[in-house]
Image (cartoon, rainbow, N blue to C red; front, side, top):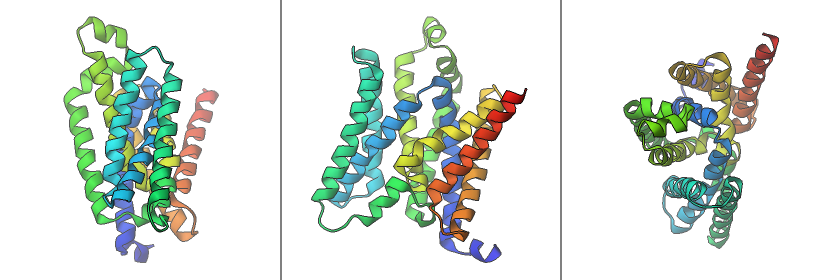
Length: 266
């Protein structure tokens, strides 16, 4: 155990788990409370389009994912509120278009894009120092945003109609919140991958929601649970040579099921 902790790649993985858990713990609570899990899924999968384009252009894949995720978040938010289209139709269209664009540009890129599989399925043991820096900067942006707008975000999360009556710009805040979801998506892509990402965004927060209804406590608890789930998944995946993303999600799911079972017993 002590020997593996001396490896740089393992230290990077644990730091990545911490940074991803902070983002999950904060933004995941809003996702669960506002019931926008499906929207978050659309944002996460559409970001694959940005990964594919960036890979084709020889640019940083996470930068492409960030641009595409934010654009998709704003597009979904605008069309859901300002058009007559059903929310699920808009989300499904953005979801499919993003994935299709990503696959198309990867197919157009010479060579075999083996490293992009880590963005689909995740491999937190392969996170580089450069990725950690990006994750850290995005975490700071998320925490600063929540710290500045916590009270209005809470009002919008629990009762949009009341927020409108007291003059809170609900539409603008919802668009900003979706942008923060997009940032969180990019932070977690390398940890668990696009396919499993939505589970890590929601399961720790949903588990915390079973234990407390106070939003601040929920965020702290969700962050703490995310750190435990991610760290346990990293150790198990390393020692038993298992996929890290899938292991993290399974442990998160077990935690959620235990919390749910305890709720039923009350």
